[in-house]
Image (cartoon, rainbow, N blue to C red; front, side, top):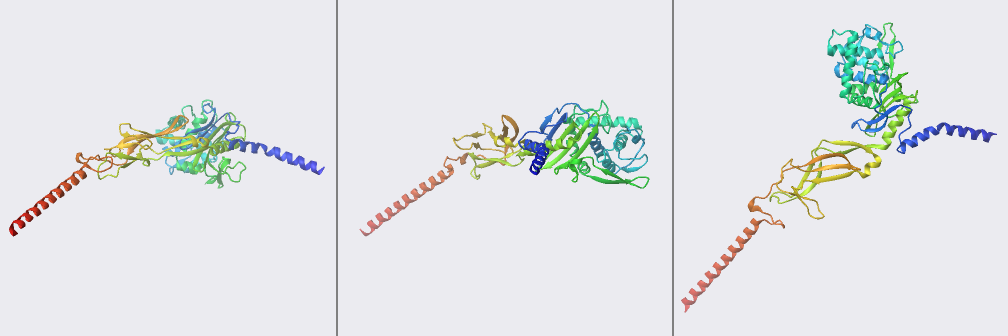
Length: 448
């Protein structure tokens, strides 16, 4: 009986952990995780390359992930040290909204409001920021309703600048409205822009904050709703750096998440996930990206691509020339499996080079510094990953007319000097012999 009970317990334990083992092996094997999310995407932050997508262009409700865009506008158009007075706009949010606990008439800095917006996901903080920014940009005479509408127009314009072309925002907080929608791709592009801002990164990485004291004397605590960054939470992900959660009945569970590992930063978006599945699905996407992709620097501006021999160069030159990469430094993200098949191709201007069989091409002097002499290309399975012009790193002069080089490297002037020396020596020899003969003849006649 004891053996039977022990075996049963072991089987139950194995069954309970088998899904975790399956997901881990699946991700490591190069397959993306299965998702309940209706739409999802994974991108690399620096390049914006899409690494995975599930209905990435489907229009879905973003819920409070909308606040990423609200925060970006606050940082870009506002002054973080401005003191903002909370107004009646905090009473214009639905009763079941998430709140930061702001009260009409209280005053705090815009930076402080950002924490209330992004940590506790306060719709009241979103409206307060919207009115402040709208009046700062559009004029102090805007009514609250007009200011909120004005801010929505700012949101849509900024979203389009970020590359989010299939979205429409009608409020600053994301509470459900049938005309308020976005896509996984658009939310990734908005997050990518926001993550360029240092203060945004600082706020979304904050787990808890003690905020201003309420009128009743009690302190207000704001706790980040993103469980991925809380070390004492079972959903904690050690590489997570942010970004923002979202939920409404119509939107389902949403999460825009960022993570950094081994020098690569990724952003994942899941929209309309099943309840509480957004954490594991986001971790699975991020791990899939880190395990299967790598960021590669194809080339760096100013670095030397190749050193070529030069023919027909001037006597004071050394006969070789380094060619530089002139294009901007370029990085790409590729599958680790594709690293070995990336091709590096050098192409040269046929008018500037000659070829010797089995050797590097030879540049023809003269060559000017900065002159484009060829190009560098990187190809992957027939697709161009990146390219750059190649230019001469210095001047190489051709010889002057009297300084024509032979294949052996001996100059014509050397031949002329040698010939002149030989002729002069011969003439001197002949003159010496003639002089000695004249002396002998005189000696002979004198003693005869």
